[in-house]
Image (tube, rainbow, N blue to C red; front, side):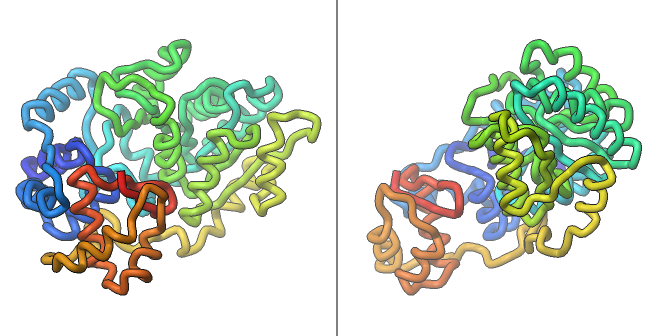
Length: 360
């Protein structure tokens, strides 16, 4: 991939209303980011709106700030873009990283848990991470307080990856600033956000999909019901990765999430040997067709006005699965995807979790 194409891919994903799903669809249809950028105005016009493309100078400034922070880019399509993450639905088209990129190519295990974790759980997480590192695994976590911090500390000497929900030049939480710097020097620091991006609540669930996507399996050490750690576990399960959990006392609310996961079929974990055994039986379910070459059925070319109108008529403010739109409209998947793409570029469509869409 040429440097110009890498620049264009970064410009494409940074443009408003271009998310990971839209990015893949545009690349599947046009082949190069340059062609996709040129096509955006016409596509948005067909959707009833106007395209907004980020200025090239803004991308140049972002790249300069990343380099000043000692970071580099991994663009989807690069040979060293993490393979397992590339198989994840909604994988970020661009990553900014500091540290040893080769760690992402090794056998990775995600470890997540409560921020207000008990002392016993933090001690167990440190020991488990250290044992996993001694067995050759790379521990992936989110650098949050509690279990995440303990996991990184335990695996620091053997290799660990921290995925953050802010810019590569921002230390969060502040008390982990020194640990974050050590991770960048001895491990790998990963983000999908441009330098200067502050950590906002809505960015953490998106961060969790990267944690789950980098790893062969996810271990939840301690988690309350409806916590962010359970989001990571759910994403791992949906991608066909192994979900593992450490049991806890029924009297401790922080253990309820893990105990519930085990009831639902997660592998019960007591030591590193249990983890290694669990991820050793991952099967082909974890591999999604497509990947960095943007294979699969691309959106259609020309769409008749009556076809476009029939799809729009089925949409409303309530999210509806794309598969349902295809079934009800009687149109081919490529035609429906093209209409949705045009509406999204025109700021008339919102995408939701679970492959659902609605009018904005």
